[in-house]
Length: 239
Image 1: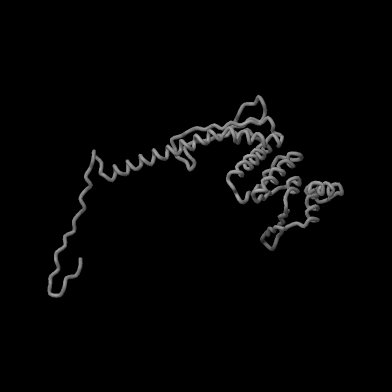
Image 2: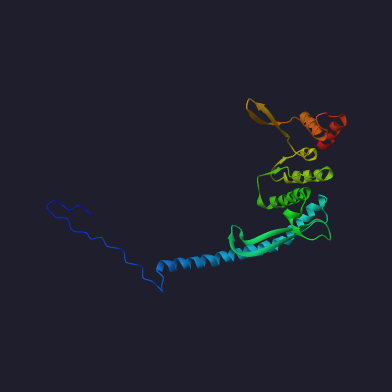
């Protein structure tokens, strides 16, 4: 209430209570507005979710073909996939679909959930294939593979290294590995060294020189007692 001037008296001020909203069909206006807005938003979201679902279903055959093509290079020529797409009543960040990936490793075997039926080596190769494909669309500047080569060796490890090498043409690739076949594919080779310092453990990352790299890959091949044949094999892998 503003102060009155000198010689005048304060005018009385009466506080009034807001009038209730006029109900329409038994509900206040604001409730009806909220419901109408929610309905419009829900219809729009459903429209977007339907479009996402259609795009997802259209992309599945192409994705399956690409995965199978890469896996055929990794010793899994008979592998097959199915994507089970179920539209739900719930809303997710990427639509309303629940997606399950079904996998069959060999001809004549039934499909099962990938996470339940794939072995460790199969899972490693499948994950690499999917990441290699998605990397072409996501435009990532960097990708890190943390022992994605688990459960593989020999010629398959070489092929996995070649796929990572190809990916490195369009992005930076870090591969944490214990396999010499993959370590030899890198442009640079770092070694993780752990040492004790008092009551703590310190981890160091060392960039290996060309000669150190030969020695390290030879150790990965034959252990600490490096043989001449292991050194020659390491040089062959690097070349």
